[in-house]
Length: 212
Image (tube, rainbow, N blue to C red):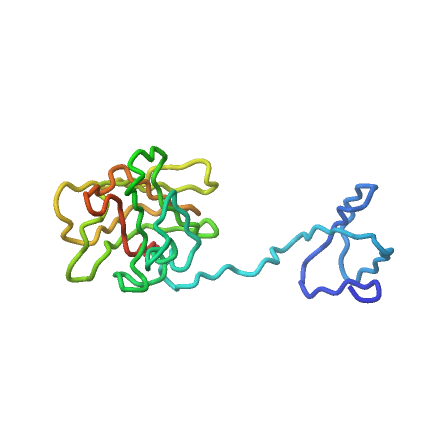
């Protein structure tokens, strides 16, 4: 706003004053002159165009890359952090080991054990890959025995997408393909962590989400 004149560069856009006391729905366009007293304000609703910038993912293919992540519990030290599960490194290193949930000393923890990714908007996808910790040649033994993957658009209502179960040593990276879904949140619920006397928890190195 400059000297009472609103300047905008959107073609085909009209404004409606939603701060007016008379509740007028008159649409304004072109050059608009506004008088505002000190301490006053004007609020307008933009019609006819979505003026928000186009959303761009940090990675051209992997929707999970660098997205916000949440978990019920996390080790949170020594290379084990939530964010390390979406940092683009498929396998573990000294500074990026992945995500780890450690139940040592808290074996009575009875709340839902989960890890969740926020894609920041509803996105279409049909493939999820969850890498075990360790190296490409040798997986660690702390990959979960079973988990369910859920999707949601509002973080309130969830639909189960796939279930994973194993009863033997992990030999290959678990990869899930399915009919295309559209959702914002991807939630992994651990139904049976790989409970080990020394590990007593669950871990994975990286999650990737694709629309292939």
